Figure 1: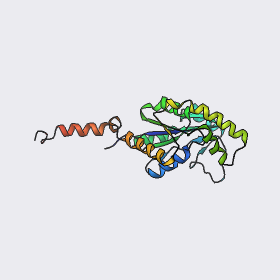
Figure 2: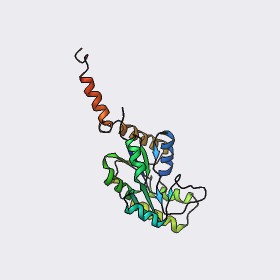
Figure 3: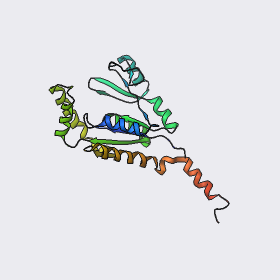
Figure 4: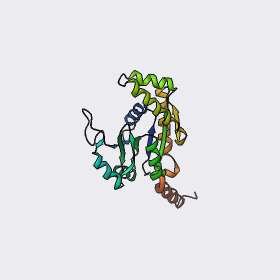
Amino acid sequence: MNRRGILFVLSSPSGAGKSTMARMLLEAEPDMRVSISATTRAPRRGEEHGREYFFESETEFDTLVETGALIEWAHVFDHRYGTPRAPVEEALTSGKDMLFDVDWQGTQQLRQQMREDIVSIFLLPPSMAELERRLRSRGTDSDDVIAGRMDRAEAEISHWAEYDYVFINDHLSSCFADVRKVVDGERLRRTRRGASLTDFVRNMSRSPDAGA
Protein backbone atom coordinates (compact mmCIF):
# COMPACT_ATOMS: atom_id res chain seq x y z
CA MET A 1 0.00 0.00 0.00
CA ASN A 2 1.27 3.43 -0.92
CA ARG A 3 1.72 5.97 1.86
CA ARG A 4 3.11 9.43 2.37
CA GLY A 5 6.67 9.64 3.66
CA ILE A 6 7.51 10.41 7.29
CA LEU A 7 9.97 12.95 8.69
CA PHE A 8 11.82 11.30 11.58
CA VAL A 9 13.52 13.93 13.74
CA LEU A 10 16.38 12.87 15.99
CA SER A 11 17.68 15.29 18.63
CA SER A 12 20.05 15.12 21.59
CA PRO A 13 22.72 17.17 23.32
CA SER A 14 26.19 16.93 21.81
CA GLY A 15 27.76 13.71 23.11
CA ALA A 16 24.50 11.86 23.79
CA GLY A 17 24.80 9.62 20.73
CA LYS A 18 22.66 11.32 18.10
CA SER A 19 25.18 11.00 15.26
CA THR A 20 25.89 7.34 16.04
CA MET A 21 22.18 6.58 16.24
CA ALA A 22 21.52 8.32 12.94
CA ARG A 23 24.31 6.37 11.23
CA MET A 24 23.00 3.05 12.57
CA LEU A 25 19.46 3.87 11.49
CA LEU A 26 20.51 4.80 7.96
CA GLU A 27 22.52 1.58 7.67
CA ALA A 28 19.51 -0.45 8.81
CA GLU A 29 17.05 1.48 6.61
CA PRO A 30 18.67 1.80 3.16
CA ASP A 31 15.55 3.43 1.66
CA MET A 32 15.50 6.18 4.27
CA ARG A 33 16.91 9.47 3.07
CA VAL A 34 18.98 11.82 5.19
CA SER A 35 18.20 15.50 5.18
CA ILE A 36 21.15 17.51 3.85
CA SER A 37 21.32 20.90 5.51
CA ALA A 38 22.42 24.23 4.13
CA THR A 39 25.06 25.95 6.24
CA THR A 40 27.12 29.11 6.33
CA ARG A 41 30.18 27.42 7.82
CA ALA A 42 33.14 26.66 5.57
CA PRO A 43 33.60 23.09 4.29
CA ARG A 44 36.11 20.94 6.15
CA ARG A 45 38.73 18.80 4.45
CA GLY A 46 37.04 16.12 2.33
CA GLU A 47 33.55 17.64 2.47
CA GLU A 48 31.68 18.37 -0.75
CA HIS A 49 28.86 20.75 -1.56
CA GLY A 50 25.61 18.79 -1.79
CA ARG A 51 26.97 15.69 -0.05
CA GLU A 52 27.64 16.58 3.60
CA TYR A 53 26.05 20.05 3.39
CA PHE A 54 24.99 22.72 0.96
CA PHE A 55 27.67 25.32 1.72
CA GLU A 56 26.24 28.81 1.28
CA SER A 57 27.57 32.30 1.80
CA GLU A 58 25.83 34.57 4.30
CA THR A 59 24.15 36.40 1.41
CA GLU A 60 23.01 33.18 -0.24
CA PHE A 61 21.63 31.93 3.07
CA ASP A 62 19.74 35.21 3.54
CA THR A 63 18.11 34.66 0.14
CA LEU A 64 17.06 31.12 1.07
CA VAL A 65 15.41 32.45 4.24
CA GLU A 66 13.69 35.37 2.51
CA THR A 67 12.26 33.25 -0.31
CA GLY A 68 10.91 30.54 1.99
CA ALA A 69 13.24 27.93 0.51
CA LEU A 70 14.09 26.62 4.00
CA ILE A 71 11.64 24.72 6.21
CA GLU A 72 13.67 25.57 9.30
CA TRP A 73 16.91 27.26 10.21
CA ALA A 74 18.85 28.24 13.33
CA HIS A 75 22.15 29.57 14.65
CA VAL A 76 24.36 26.76 15.96
CA PHE A 77 27.83 27.53 17.32
CA ASP A 78 28.27 30.81 15.40
CA HIS A 79 26.97 29.49 12.08
CA ARG A 80 23.56 29.10 10.47
CA TYR A 81 22.06 25.77 9.45
CA GLY A 82 18.78 25.13 7.64
CA THR A 83 16.74 22.49 5.83
CA PRO A 84 15.96 23.04 2.12
CA ARG A 85 12.25 22.63 1.41
CA ALA A 86 12.24 21.12 -2.10
CA PRO A 87 13.93 17.74 -1.43
CA VAL A 88 11.78 17.21 1.67
CA GLU A 89 8.51 17.75 -0.15
CA GLU A 90 9.67 15.54 -3.03
CA ALA A 91 10.52 12.70 -0.62
CA LEU A 92 7.21 12.90 1.21
CA THR A 93 5.20 12.88 -2.00
CA SER A 94 7.10 9.84 -3.30
CA GLY A 95 6.56 7.93 -0.04
CA LYS A 96 10.18 8.12 1.12
CA ASP A 97 11.01 8.60 4.80
CA MET A 98 13.60 11.19 5.80
CA LEU A 99 15.86 11.46 8.84
CA PHE A 100 16.58 14.86 10.38
CA ASP A 101 19.47 15.51 12.74
CA VAL A 102 18.37 18.86 14.22
CA ASP A 103 18.14 20.56 17.61
CA TRP A 104 14.98 21.50 19.50
CA GLN A 105 14.67 24.82 17.68
CA GLY A 106 14.71 23.10 14.30
CA THR A 107 12.23 20.53 15.57
CA GLN A 108 9.81 23.27 16.62
CA GLN A 109 10.02 24.95 13.23
CA LEU A 110 9.51 21.66 11.40
CA ARG A 111 6.48 20.89 13.54
CA GLN A 112 4.97 24.30 12.84
CA GLN A 113 5.16 23.77 9.09
CA MET A 114 4.69 20.01 8.70
CA ARG A 115 2.99 18.84 11.89
CA GLU A 116 1.23 15.79 10.43
CA ASP A 117 4.45 14.44 8.88
CA ILE A 118 6.76 14.74 11.91
CA VAL A 119 7.79 12.02 14.37
CA SER A 120 10.26 13.41 16.91
CA ILE A 121 12.71 11.41 19.04
CA PHE A 122 14.93 12.81 21.79
CA LEU A 123 17.95 10.97 23.24
CA LEU A 124 18.96 11.64 26.83
CA PRO A 125 22.41 10.82 28.25
CA PRO A 126 22.51 8.50 31.29
CA SER A 127 23.67 11.46 33.40
CA MET A 128 25.32 14.85 33.02
CA ALA A 129 28.53 13.42 34.45
CA GLU A 130 28.56 10.72 31.76
CA LEU A 131 27.82 13.30 29.08
CA GLU A 132 30.83 15.37 30.18
CA ARG A 133 33.00 12.23 30.26
CA ARG A 134 32.02 11.43 26.66
CA LEU A 135 32.80 14.97 25.52
CA ARG A 136 36.22 14.90 27.18
CA SER A 137 37.01 11.44 25.79
CA ARG A 138 36.93 12.89 22.28
CA GLY A 139 40.10 14.82 23.07
CA THR A 140 39.25 17.54 20.55
CA ASP A 141 37.80 20.37 22.67
CA SER A 142 39.25 22.76 25.23
CA ASP A 143 37.82 23.09 28.73
CA ASP A 144 36.03 26.28 27.70
CA VAL A 145 34.43 24.60 24.70
CA ILE A 146 33.32 21.64 26.81
CA ALA A 147 31.86 24.00 29.40
CA GLY A 148 29.91 25.74 26.66
CA ARG A 149 28.64 22.41 25.31
CA MET A 150 27.52 21.38 28.78
CA ASP A 151 25.60 24.64 29.23
CA ARG A 152 23.95 24.14 25.85
CA ALA A 153 23.15 20.52 26.77
CA GLU A 154 21.21 21.63 29.83
CA ALA A 155 19.21 24.07 27.71
CA GLU A 156 18.45 21.39 25.11
CA ILE A 157 17.44 18.79 27.70
CA SER A 158 14.92 21.24 29.15
CA HIS A 159 12.86 20.70 25.96
CA TRP A 160 12.66 16.91 26.26
CA ALA A 161 8.91 16.88 26.97
CA GLU A 162 8.18 18.50 23.58
CA TYR A 163 9.15 15.30 21.76
CA ASP A 164 6.94 12.34 20.81
CA TYR A 165 9.42 9.74 22.06
CA VAL A 166 12.23 10.06 24.61
CA PHE A 167 14.88 7.40 25.25
CA ILE A 168 17.81 7.23 27.67
CA ASN A 169 20.87 6.26 25.67
CA ASP A 170 22.64 4.24 28.37
CA HIS A 171 23.05 1.09 26.25
CA LEU A 172 23.41 1.83 22.54
CA SER A 173 22.03 -1.48 21.25
CA SER A 174 18.86 -1.42 23.36
CA CYS A 175 18.28 2.26 22.64
CA PHE A 176 18.66 1.59 18.92
CA ALA A 177 16.14 -1.27 19.17
CA ASP A 178 13.64 1.15 20.72
CA VAL A 179 14.20 3.68 17.94
CA ARG A 180 13.59 0.97 15.33
CA LYS A 181 10.30 0.08 17.04
CA VAL A 182 9.20 3.70 16.70
CA VAL A 183 10.05 3.72 12.99
CA ASP A 184 8.19 0.47 12.32
CA GLY A 185 5.18 1.43 14.40
CA GLU A 186 4.76 4.89 12.89
CA ARG A 187 4.82 3.44 9.39
CA LEU A 188 1.86 1.22 10.28
CA ARG A 189 -0.38 3.97 11.64
CA ARG A 190 -3.78 3.95 9.93
CA THR A 191 -3.62 7.70 9.36
CA ARG A 192 -0.34 7.34 7.44
CA ARG A 193 -1.59 4.68 5.05
CA GLY A 194 -4.07 7.11 3.56
CA ALA A 195 -6.18 6.61 0.46
CA SER A 196 -4.71 3.23 -0.47
CA LEU A 197 -6.08 1.64 2.72
CA THR A 198 -9.43 3.39 2.30
CA ASP A 199 -9.69 2.14 -1.29
CA PHE A 200 -8.76 -1.39 -0.22
CA VAL A 201 -11.52 -1.53 2.40
CA ARG A 202 -14.05 0.05 0.03
CA ASN A 203 -13.25 -2.46 -2.72
CA MET A 204 -13.34 -5.36 -0.29
CA SER A 205 -16.83 -4.42 0.89
CA ARG A 206 -18.01 -4.41 -2.73
CA SER A 207 -16.57 -7.82 -3.49
CA PRO A 208 -19.10 -10.32 -4.94
CA ASP A 209 -17.92 -12.84 -2.36
CA ALA A 210 -18.35 -10.44 0.57
CA GLY A 211 -21.44 -12.26 1.84
CA ALA A 212 -20.11 -15.77 1.31
